[in-house]
Amino acid sequence: MKLDQIDDEMAALLATKTEAERLAIAWGMWRAARRMIERIVAAENPDLTPPEQERIVANLMSHGT
Image 1 (cartoon, rainbow, N blue to C red):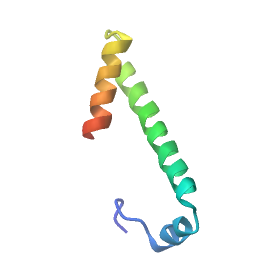
Image 2: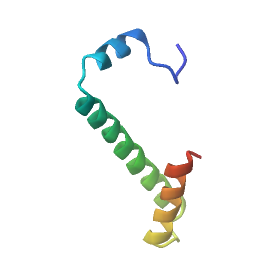
Image 3: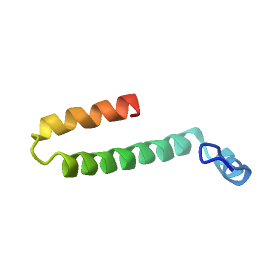
Image 4: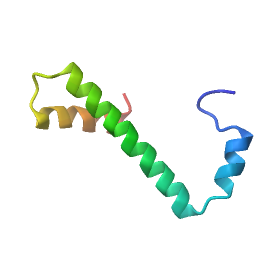
C-alpha cells in the first residue's frame, strides 16, 4: 500500500460515516497537523515573535511545503 492511498478497510469504514462525521475527522486532522507545525516552527525559530511564527505556520499550511 502507498502511504498516500486509502486501503479498502479504511474506505469501507469511511463509507459508513455521514458527511458531518467525515468533515469532523478531516477538521481534527487539520488541527492536529497545525499544532505539530506550530511546535516545530516555535522550536526551530525561538527568536521570532509569535506573529512572525504564525506567518510561517500559515504559509506552510497554505502551500504544503
